[in-house]
View 1 (cartoon, rainbow, N blue to C red):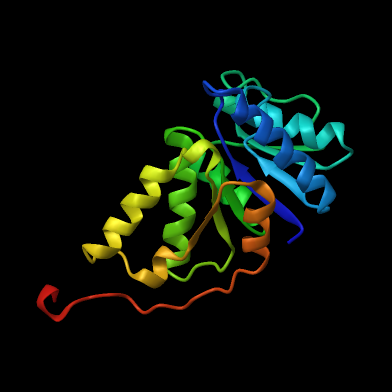
View 2: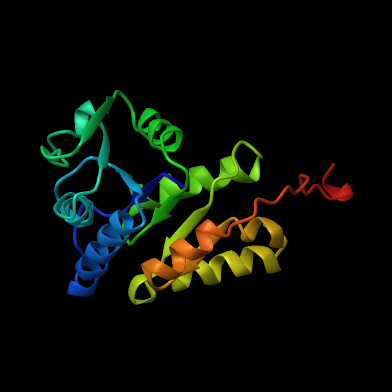
Length: 193
C-alpha cells in the first residue's frame, strides 16, 4: 500500500479518545510511509488526522466537492486537493488514488463511503482492503449487524470478511497489509429464481 483513504466524521465526537486515536492514525500513516487520502476538510476528525499527517512530514491528498468546500471548510494546508462536482465523483476519486480504505467513527457520509466500496468489492470490481477502526467500540453494533446478515443469509460469510476491523490503528493496518482478496460467486438460491 502506498496511499490509504480514511473516511471519518466532520465532527470530533463526544469523547476526546476519538481525537487522540485520529492523531495516532495520522502519525502511524507517516511512520508507515503512507499518503493520507481523505475528504479534504479541516474540521472534525478529518482535520485532526490531516493535521497529524502534515505535522509529521507526511503527504495528504484531499478530495472535496465544490459545494462542500465551504460547509466542511476545506483544509488549506494539504499537499494536493482535488475538487469534484458530486459526492459520487468524490468517492470514485478517493478510490482511484488509494490502495485501501478505513472508516473511523463518523455518521451517514462515513457509512455511505465505506459501504459503497464494500458493494464494489462484493461485485468483484476491486480487491482493495477495507477496514473499520472501532474506537471505543463505536462499531460494535454494526459488526453485530453484519453477523446477523450472515446468520439470516443476506450476506455470505466470505463477503463478511470484506470488512476488517480492529480497535487500534496499528492492528488494523497489519490486517489490511495481510488481506487476501476473496472471489465469491453470487449467492442466488434456486427458490429465488
